[in-house]
Image (tube, rainbow, N blue to C red):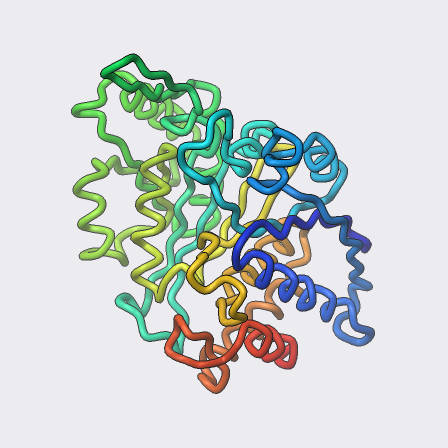
Length: 339
């Protein structure tokens, strides 16, 4: 099978971890690796502040078209500089333009990694296109406003996705609101989720308020399986959850819509270490693993997960953020060797 993969390097350490991940994917095409005749063709595009300075757009139209004609997109982290007039986050622009309504972040602990929760295994499913990240806001002389938009359609989309996932996993779903205070927007989110729940009687459902959930995600991690959230709550809780399993360098993500999908490490551009060759590529590689699962290449995806896990268990080649002193390339090469 030949897949067309759109590749966006992004900014900062994206320029380092994404090329290494592409090399790992190229290793999967080696003759004799599997009997799937797997092939990738890569096409590269640009997004972000640097292209904005040249074109006035954080996401050029040709980049959107590149993603549309691809089977999937592998994307690095991007910078959203504060205080720049007319600049809109590139990744938010892509999510909204392609209706990538589901942000899926698996939180999993791995043997060999020193972390707070040794047996964590949950997924945060976050609405990805609206909420407080709607991009609608304004100021008066003394007051600023950002509009939190929750729609029935977008909530139904993300709720159905989360319930289908819960049905395949542990048949337990926790949805997050602050409906006791934010009565209108969280209230609609709550009503729609409970309405969708009626179509999934096999899934146990509970509502949690976001503040108490922030505490219990640490105290009672093993009580949760699929966690469904509006946009901002999921962004915050998923970074908190990453701290439980060893940090952002281990956490991948998928941005899923009905017609398109983009895969991206959760971590940022890390300007403090960019260019030094020491960034952890594992989150980017695991994002590629999620991409393979999405494309239906489960055997190959599983093999990639085994290769990553062996690096972490052996502890001979570890990146700096996990207590080692190996370079980005050395970690990626170790993963390739294990394949």
